[in-house]
Image (cartoon, rainbow, N blue to C red; front, side, top):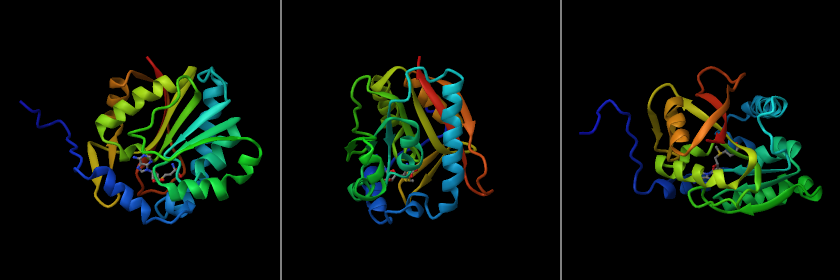
Length: 231
Ligand SMILES: C[S@@+](CC[C@H](N)C(=O)[O-])C[C@H]1O[C@@H](n2cnc3c(N)ncnc32)[C@H](O)[C@@H]1O
C-alpha cells in the first residue's frame, strides 16, 4: 500500500530536456545564474568561503585543498569567486555548453593563466562519473534540484568514488519547509531538508557539518550548506 502521507515527486518524462531548454534561454551572466537576484552573489560567496574555512580549521577536510570539482558550474561564478581562491585546481561540470564557453573564454581566463583550471566537462550530472579519488571537495551548488531523486542518489554514490581519502562532498541548495516544491518553469524541485538528508543517507553519506546561509532577503527559500563524508 502506498503511504499517502509520504511526500511524492514524480518527474515528468521530459524532465531533463525541459531544464535544458530553460537554461538555453538564460543570459550568460551572474544575474542569469542567480535567477535575477544578483544581489545574493556577495553574501553567497562570503558564507561559502566561511563554511569551507571552518571545515579546514576544524580538521573536517583532511585530504587538503589541492583539487575541487564545481558541479553545475554555469558560467563559472562559483569557481571564479570562491573555488579557485581556495583550491590549487578546479574542474567544472555543466550541461550548457554556452555557459561553459563563457566560463572558459571570459570568467576564468585569469585563473587559467595561473594554471588553476583543470578540465571542463560539458555534461549533465546525471551522466557525470568523476575520476577515482581525484577530488578533495566536490562542490554542488544550486543544481541538485535539477536531478530526480533516483539520479541524485546515483550521482552522490559516484561522487564518493571521486573523493580522495578525507575529502568531502559539499552541497549548497535551496530547501523547502516541507515536502517537494516542483517548478515547471525551469524543471526543478526544491526539497525539504529531511528529504535531502534521506537521500544522502541512502547514498551512504554522513553529514559532517551543516550551516544555513545568512544575509539573504526574507521571502527567498532558505539555503543550506552540507559537508558530506562517506560512511
Ligand atoms: C542556478 S544555476 C547555478 C550555477 C552555479 N552553480 C552558480 O551558483 O552560479 C544552475 C546551473 O545548473 C545547470 N544545470 C541544470 N541542470 C543540470 C544538470 N542536469 N546537470 C548539470 N548542470 C545542470 C544549469 O545549466 C545552470 O548553469
